[in-house]
Image (tube, rainbow, N blue to C red; front, side, top):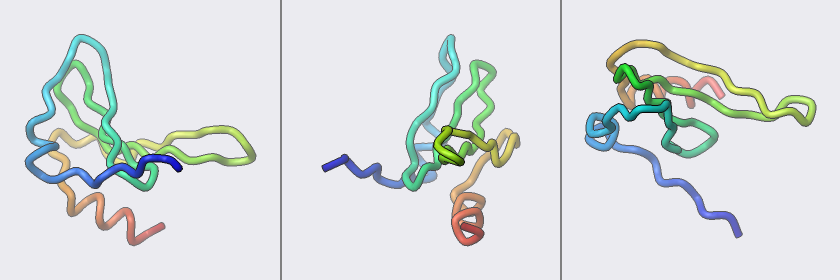
Length: 76
């Protein structure tokens, strides 16, 4: 059985630090926080369409909050 990702908290998101290369942290339900080397954090949704994995960046704002994520989940 696959391991379920636990939702990220505001504190966990704030503590994510930039690294030399871009990385992502799972937030559950196909949503990820993508952390750029410049320190910008973006929500990214990964889904499958016609058998191919596709990603959609939901925001490019410097400050990303859980309220934005919750609003996005309501749209799904």
